[in-house]
Image 1 (cartoon, rainbow, N blue to C red):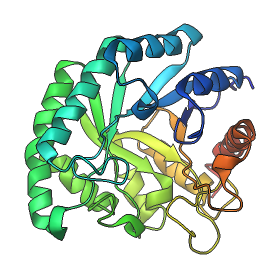
Image 2 (image 1 turned 60 degrees about the vertical axis):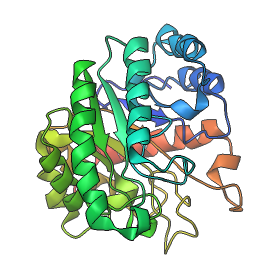
Image 3 (image 1 turned 90 degrees about the vertical axis):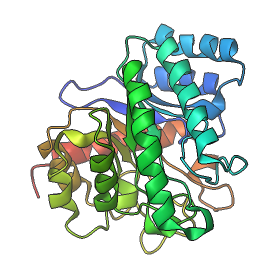
Image 4 (image 1 turned 30 degrees about the vertical axis):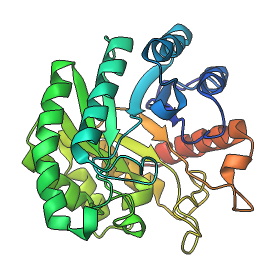
Length: 294
Protein backbone atom coordinates (compact mmCIF):
# COMPACT_ATOMS: atom_id res chain seq x y z
CA UNK A 1 0.00 0.00 0.00
CA UNK A 2 2.33 2.73 -1.22
CA UNK A 3 1.68 6.30 -0.19
CA UNK A 4 0.44 8.78 -2.75
CA UNK A 5 2.65 11.85 -2.29
CA UNK A 6 -0.35 14.17 -2.66
CA UNK A 7 -1.88 12.88 0.58
CA UNK A 8 -0.89 13.83 4.13
CA UNK A 9 0.75 11.35 6.48
CA UNK A 10 -1.64 8.58 7.50
CA UNK A 11 -0.98 7.09 10.91
CA UNK A 12 -2.56 4.32 12.97
CA UNK A 13 -3.13 4.35 16.71
CA UNK A 14 -2.42 1.13 18.53
CA UNK A 15 -5.89 1.45 20.08
CA UNK A 16 -7.19 0.48 16.63
CA UNK A 17 -5.44 -2.89 16.88
CA UNK A 18 -5.97 -3.29 20.61
CA UNK A 19 -5.76 -7.09 20.76
CA UNK A 20 -2.35 -7.20 19.11
CA UNK A 21 0.99 -6.83 20.87
CA UNK A 22 3.26 -3.86 20.29
CA UNK A 23 5.55 -6.01 18.15
CA UNK A 24 2.62 -7.26 16.06
CA UNK A 25 1.44 -3.68 15.52
CA UNK A 26 4.84 -2.51 14.30
CA UNK A 27 5.12 -5.43 11.88
CA UNK A 28 1.57 -4.99 10.57
CA UNK A 29 1.75 -1.22 10.02
CA UNK A 30 5.12 -1.58 8.30
CA UNK A 31 3.85 -4.40 6.05
CA UNK A 32 0.84 -2.29 5.01
CA UNK A 33 3.02 0.68 4.08
CA UNK A 34 1.59 2.87 6.84
CA UNK A 35 3.77 5.93 7.43
CA UNK A 36 3.10 6.63 11.09
CA UNK A 37 2.19 5.09 14.42
CA UNK A 38 0.51 6.44 17.54
CA UNK A 39 2.19 4.44 20.28
CA UNK A 40 0.13 3.25 23.23
CA UNK A 41 2.53 2.99 26.14
CA UNK A 42 0.29 0.39 27.77
CA UNK A 43 1.53 -2.10 25.16
CA UNK A 44 5.14 -1.61 26.25
CA UNK A 45 7.03 -3.34 29.02
CA UNK A 46 6.95 -1.57 32.38
CA UNK A 47 10.72 -2.13 32.56
CA UNK A 48 12.40 1.06 31.28
CA UNK A 49 15.27 -0.66 29.45
CA UNK A 50 13.02 -3.26 27.87
CA UNK A 51 10.64 -0.53 26.71
CA UNK A 52 13.54 1.33 25.08
CA UNK A 53 14.50 -1.85 23.23
CA UNK A 54 10.93 -2.27 22.00
CA UNK A 55 10.79 1.33 20.82
CA UNK A 56 14.03 0.89 18.88
CA UNK A 57 12.14 -1.42 16.48
CA UNK A 58 9.97 1.52 15.41
CA UNK A 59 13.03 3.44 14.26
CA UNK A 60 14.49 0.37 12.59
CA UNK A 61 11.46 -0.19 10.36
CA UNK A 62 11.11 3.50 9.46
CA UNK A 63 7.76 4.24 11.09
CA UNK A 64 7.25 7.85 12.15
CA UNK A 65 5.98 8.37 15.70
CA UNK A 66 3.14 10.80 15.06
CA UNK A 67 1.85 10.80 18.65
CA UNK A 68 2.01 8.92 21.94
CA UNK A 69 -0.69 7.79 24.35
CA UNK A 70 1.08 7.73 27.74
CA UNK A 71 0.38 4.90 30.17
CA UNK A 72 -1.34 7.45 32.42
CA UNK A 73 -2.69 10.02 29.98
CA UNK A 74 -5.49 11.62 32.02
CA UNK A 75 -4.92 14.23 34.71
CA UNK A 76 -7.67 12.70 36.84
CA UNK A 77 -8.99 9.15 37.14
CA UNK A 78 -10.24 7.59 33.89
CA UNK A 79 -11.40 4.15 32.79
CA UNK A 80 -7.96 3.10 31.52
CA UNK A 81 -6.21 3.93 34.76
CA UNK A 82 -8.75 4.08 37.61
CA UNK A 83 -6.38 2.93 40.36
CA UNK A 84 -4.35 6.15 40.67
CA UNK A 85 -6.58 8.94 41.97
CA UNK A 86 -4.14 11.65 43.05
CA UNK A 87 -3.66 14.10 40.13
CA UNK A 88 -0.17 15.01 41.37
CA UNK A 89 0.89 11.35 41.15
CA UNK A 90 -0.71 11.04 37.72
CA UNK A 91 1.13 14.21 36.72
CA UNK A 92 4.41 12.57 37.77
CA UNK A 93 3.60 9.43 35.75
CA UNK A 94 3.10 11.63 32.68
CA UNK A 95 6.54 13.14 33.29
CA UNK A 96 7.99 9.63 33.30
CA UNK A 97 6.41 9.01 29.90
CA UNK A 98 8.00 12.21 28.60
CA UNK A 99 11.37 10.95 29.83
CA UNK A 100 10.98 7.54 28.16
CA UNK A 101 9.88 8.74 24.76
CA UNK A 102 12.22 11.72 24.54
CA UNK A 103 15.12 9.35 25.21
CA UNK A 104 13.88 6.81 22.68
CA UNK A 105 13.20 9.39 19.94
CA UNK A 106 15.44 12.41 20.56
CA UNK A 107 15.13 13.65 16.97
CA UNK A 108 11.35 13.20 16.54
CA UNK A 109 8.71 15.90 16.88
CA UNK A 110 7.11 14.08 19.79
CA UNK A 111 3.54 14.90 20.80
CA UNK A 112 1.90 13.23 23.79
CA UNK A 113 -1.88 13.06 24.16
CA UNK A 114 -3.71 13.99 27.35
CA UNK A 115 -7.35 14.05 28.45
CA UNK A 116 -8.82 15.50 31.62
CA UNK A 117 -10.29 12.40 33.23
CA UNK A 118 -13.30 12.69 35.53
CA UNK A 119 -13.77 15.52 38.02
CA UNK A 120 -13.51 14.14 41.59
CA UNK A 121 -16.89 14.25 43.36
CA UNK A 122 -18.20 16.03 40.22
CA UNK A 123 -16.57 19.22 41.45
CA UNK A 124 -15.92 20.68 38.01
CA UNK A 125 -14.77 24.08 39.26
CA UNK A 126 -12.05 22.51 41.41
CA UNK A 127 -10.99 20.14 38.62
CA UNK A 128 -10.64 23.00 36.13
CA UNK A 129 -8.59 24.95 38.68
CA UNK A 130 -6.26 21.99 39.29
CA UNK A 131 -5.81 21.47 35.55
CA UNK A 132 -4.76 25.10 35.16
CA UNK A 133 -2.12 24.62 37.85
CA UNK A 134 -0.66 21.27 36.76
CA UNK A 135 -0.74 21.54 32.97
CA UNK A 136 1.53 24.62 32.70
CA UNK A 137 4.12 22.84 34.85
CA UNK A 138 3.82 19.71 32.72
CA UNK A 139 4.13 21.71 29.49
CA UNK A 140 7.26 23.45 30.81
CA UNK A 141 8.82 20.10 31.68
CA UNK A 142 7.94 18.74 28.23
CA UNK A 143 9.44 21.82 26.56
CA UNK A 144 12.78 21.08 28.21
CA UNK A 145 12.74 17.75 26.35
CA UNK A 146 11.46 19.27 23.06
CA UNK A 147 8.12 17.52 23.52
CA UNK A 148 4.66 18.89 22.78
CA UNK A 149 1.39 17.98 24.52
CA UNK A 150 -2.04 17.95 22.93
CA UNK A 151 -5.24 18.11 24.94
CA UNK A 152 -8.21 16.13 23.64
CA UNK A 153 -11.84 17.02 24.42
CA UNK A 154 -14.16 14.01 24.39
CA UNK A 155 -17.79 13.45 23.42
CA UNK A 156 -20.51 14.50 25.90
CA UNK A 157 -21.46 10.80 26.18
CA UNK A 158 -18.26 10.45 28.24
CA UNK A 159 -18.96 13.45 30.48
CA UNK A 160 -17.38 12.87 33.88
CA UNK A 161 -16.50 9.34 32.94
CA UNK A 162 -13.30 10.14 31.09
CA UNK A 163 -13.60 13.89 30.75
CA UNK A 164 -15.01 17.14 32.07
CA UNK A 165 -14.18 18.91 28.80
CA UNK A 166 -16.68 18.06 26.07
CA UNK A 167 -16.31 20.83 23.51
CA UNK A 168 -13.52 22.44 21.52
CA UNK A 169 -14.52 25.76 23.08
CA UNK A 170 -13.87 24.44 26.60
CA UNK A 171 -10.65 22.81 25.48
CA UNK A 172 -9.40 25.99 23.83
CA UNK A 173 -10.23 27.99 26.96
CA UNK A 174 -7.98 25.64 28.91
CA UNK A 175 -5.25 25.75 26.27
CA UNK A 176 -5.30 29.54 26.27
CA UNK A 177 -5.12 29.62 30.07
CA UNK A 178 -2.18 27.20 30.09
CA UNK A 179 -0.55 29.61 27.63
CA UNK A 180 2.36 27.49 26.46
CA UNK A 181 3.40 27.22 22.82
CA UNK A 182 3.91 23.45 23.16
CA UNK A 183 0.40 22.83 24.57
CA UNK A 184 -2.27 22.53 21.89
CA UNK A 185 -5.35 20.63 20.72
CA UNK A 186 -5.96 17.08 19.56
CA UNK A 187 -9.07 17.14 17.35
CA UNK A 188 -10.84 13.78 17.38
CA UNK A 189 -13.52 13.99 14.71
CA UNK A 190 -15.63 11.33 16.44
CA UNK A 191 -15.88 13.43 19.58
CA UNK A 192 -16.48 16.89 18.10
CA UNK A 193 -18.30 16.45 14.78
CA UNK A 194 -21.74 17.33 16.23
CA UNK A 195 -20.64 20.61 17.79
CA UNK A 196 -22.48 23.71 16.54
CA UNK A 197 -20.46 25.66 13.98
CA UNK A 198 -17.92 22.84 13.91
CA UNK A 199 -16.45 23.84 10.55
CA UNK A 200 -15.97 27.52 11.44
CA UNK A 201 -14.60 26.61 14.86
CA UNK A 202 -12.16 24.18 13.30
CA UNK A 203 -10.89 26.73 10.78
CA UNK A 204 -10.26 29.15 13.66
CA UNK A 205 -7.91 26.78 15.51
CA UNK A 206 -4.88 27.93 13.55
CA UNK A 207 -1.53 26.75 14.87
CA UNK A 208 -3.02 25.44 18.12
CA UNK A 209 -4.14 22.31 16.26
CA UNK A 210 -1.47 19.68 16.93
CA UNK A 211 -3.15 16.43 15.86
CA UNK A 212 -6.19 14.73 14.33
CA UNK A 213 -7.85 11.42 15.23
CA UNK A 214 -10.03 9.66 12.66
CA UNK A 215 -12.99 7.30 13.02
CA UNK A 216 -16.64 7.50 12.05
CA UNK A 217 -19.93 7.82 13.94
CA UNK A 218 -22.51 5.08 13.26
CA UNK A 219 -26.00 5.87 12.03
CA UNK A 220 -28.22 6.73 14.97
CA UNK A 221 -26.67 6.69 18.44
CA UNK A 222 -23.66 4.50 19.32
CA UNK A 223 -24.50 1.39 21.28
CA UNK A 224 -21.46 2.07 23.45
CA UNK A 225 -18.79 4.82 23.62
CA UNK A 226 -16.54 2.30 21.89
CA UNK A 227 -18.94 1.78 18.99
CA UNK A 228 -16.98 3.43 16.19
CA UNK A 229 -16.97 2.89 12.46
CA UNK A 230 -14.41 2.78 9.70
CA UNK A 231 -13.90 6.23 8.17
CA UNK A 232 -16.48 6.79 5.45
CA UNK A 233 -18.86 4.11 6.71
CA UNK A 234 -20.73 6.34 9.14
CA UNK A 235 -22.40 9.75 9.07
CA UNK A 236 -19.54 12.25 9.47
CA UNK A 237 -19.01 14.61 6.54
CA UNK A 238 -15.30 13.94 6.15
CA UNK A 239 -14.69 15.98 2.96
CA UNK A 240 -16.05 19.12 4.58
CA UNK A 241 -14.31 18.58 7.91
CA UNK A 242 -10.98 17.76 6.26
CA UNK A 243 -11.30 20.96 4.24
CA UNK A 244 -11.82 22.95 7.44
CA UNK A 245 -8.80 21.30 9.05
CA UNK A 246 -6.61 22.09 6.05
CA UNK A 247 -7.64 25.76 6.25
CA UNK A 248 -6.05 25.98 9.71
CA UNK A 249 -2.66 25.45 8.08
CA UNK A 250 -2.33 22.05 9.75
CA UNK A 251 0.11 19.81 7.89
CA UNK A 252 0.54 17.03 10.43
CA UNK A 253 -0.58 13.42 10.47
CA UNK A 254 -4.11 12.05 10.36
CA UNK A 255 -4.28 9.18 12.80
CA UNK A 256 -6.80 6.33 12.65
CA UNK A 257 -8.04 5.68 16.19
CA UNK A 258 -10.87 3.17 16.39
CA UNK A 259 -12.21 2.01 19.72
CA UNK A 260 -14.55 -0.95 19.74
CA UNK A 261 -15.69 -3.53 22.27
CA UNK A 262 -15.71 -7.29 21.94
CA UNK A 263 -19.34 -7.55 23.02
CA UNK A 264 -20.63 -5.90 19.83
CA UNK A 265 -21.58 -8.45 17.15
CA UNK A 266 -19.77 -6.37 14.52
CA UNK A 267 -16.84 -5.34 16.71
CA UNK A 268 -13.99 -3.96 14.63
CA UNK A 269 -11.54 -5.15 17.26
CA UNK A 270 -12.55 -8.73 16.48
CA UNK A 271 -12.31 -8.31 12.71
CA UNK A 272 -9.29 -8.42 10.42
CA UNK A 273 -7.10 -5.46 11.48
CA UNK A 274 -5.45 -5.32 8.06
CA UNK A 275 -8.84 -4.85 6.40
CA UNK A 276 -9.90 -2.18 8.89
CA UNK A 277 -6.73 -0.20 8.20
CA UNK A 278 -6.87 -0.66 4.42
CA UNK A 279 -10.51 0.43 4.17
CA UNK A 280 -9.98 3.37 6.49
CA UNK A 281 -7.00 4.62 4.55
CA UNK A 282 -8.71 4.19 1.20
CA UNK A 283 -11.83 6.02 2.40
CA UNK A 284 -9.72 8.76 3.98
CA UNK A 285 -7.87 9.36 0.73
CA UNK A 286 -11.17 9.47 -1.19
CA UNK A 287 -12.50 12.06 1.27
CA UNK A 288 -9.27 14.03 1.05
CA UNK A 289 -9.58 14.29 -2.73
CA UNK A 290 -13.12 15.70 -2.30
CA UNK A 291 -12.26 18.11 0.53
CA UNK A 292 -12.75 21.24 -1.59
CA UNK A 293 -15.95 20.04 -3.22
CA UNK A 294 -18.50 20.81 -0.48
